[in-house]
Length: 244
Image 1 (tube, rainbow, N blue to C red):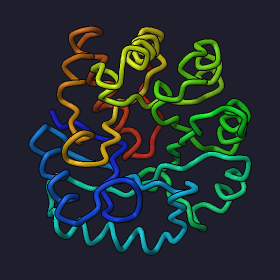
Image 2: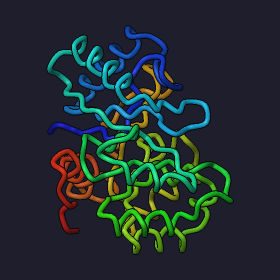
Image 3: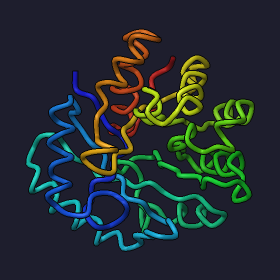
Image 4: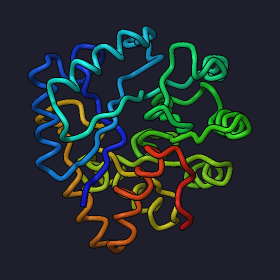
């Protein structure tokens, strides 16, 4: 079964992911050996430290990595978009402008800041859905003000937000609170993807198989396949998620 990793930092030297092409290549090899068939390369965009607003430069870096990796695992380009009150203006410019969606689809991977007080998530999600986008909230279990507010998470899901959990949160490597939030979202059937959010080949490596087995053991093989294969495949195909 080919796993699909929807959120991986692989472009060397553009953010807090791999520093060198060799490290990026090692991450790709590791992911392939672990069972990942496709990796969505998601550099930070709109981040205060890594704005990455030159889409052409990201595309060229992606093509260089793709040439080095070869056909397996497959690579597609996307981005992790930092959210603030101005993001909707930039999204309106798509498919032009500087931003990247996931694999050129109508899915947008959104990173809310770790502290509250910025753009209201419900409003952002609502406006994006009206405009025809599918907003994917990256690692909500690692954003304290979201993870500690189950009612807000449920409201976001009701408004159309999709949730991407981190594999290391599912397995408990990011602590019990993150793991408990993941369990809640899976229990409530409002977890939609599990991705590695890998940044290197060691401490935060692109491994999904352990988390896949954890989900299959706790919630069944069908749920694991939905989070790691079927739903990510829908993103790559730019189609709605299969009904649960």
